[in-house]
Image 1: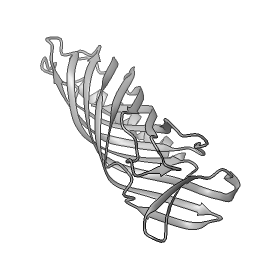
Image 2: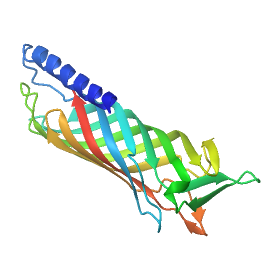
Image 3: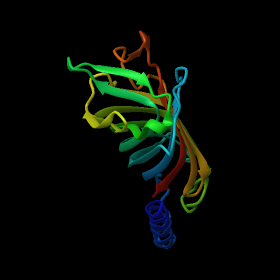
Image 4: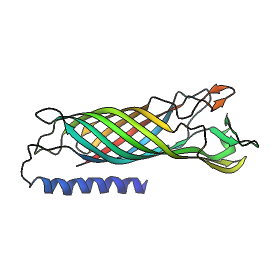
Length: 230
């Protein structure tokens, strides 16, 4: 939690210093709202099968850069295209274990007292595409915004970890994870503070991940804060 407060304090300080400098520069009629962004989210699992539940605090950290391309004369409507990195953890009771044949099997841990940690983590390179509306002007650096769009991600690594009565084991790059993730995004706020929502349109796991023959169709839902830095 201390690291979280430090990140927020650093972002706010950087934004304040930068805004003081930009207020003294000449007016740019061709201004753009190019942004570095960083975000913190609480990660949820949607479309959960029966008895699958989450525990603890599942977090996501996101950062990147978006190129702003205004499409109207007032330059308050734009298309944004960017590149970013996202790290996400999901604490839950879905056990992923390797069999003696080398395949992976999936089951639900029904007794929380039998383990102290059970989670999977994914790291992605992301391509956000946004339709952007804001109340900005060439001299106004604090404004309302509504950014909605689509985010495409490539999962370049993922891990599962379990510590409990069954032992301690960790697996990397399980074959049943989908390598590609994509979903809808929405950021709404004023100035540096923006509520952020991501809803994945495809499942985290491929068709090979099943429980008693039923596919695990859980998808990622992320709710949190997004900070835009000019």
